[in-house]
Image 1 (cartoon, one colour):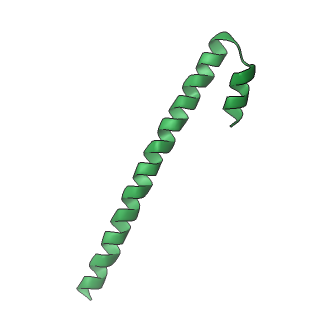
Image 2 (tube, rainbow, N blue to C red):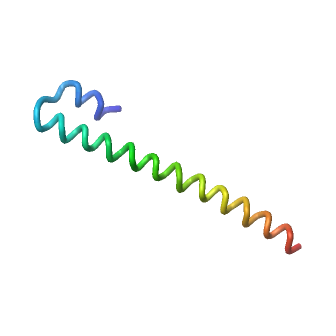
Length: 54
């Protein structure tokens, strides 16, 4: 959020740099969402596998 506010005030090269930082942060968030979803699936499968073994 702070980067978006700074982007509105910034000019020229600084504005471009901030825009790139925002884009990279958004990409990182998307990657983390995918990783979280995969981990939840793994945990669910693992827990189910433990119950079957008992």
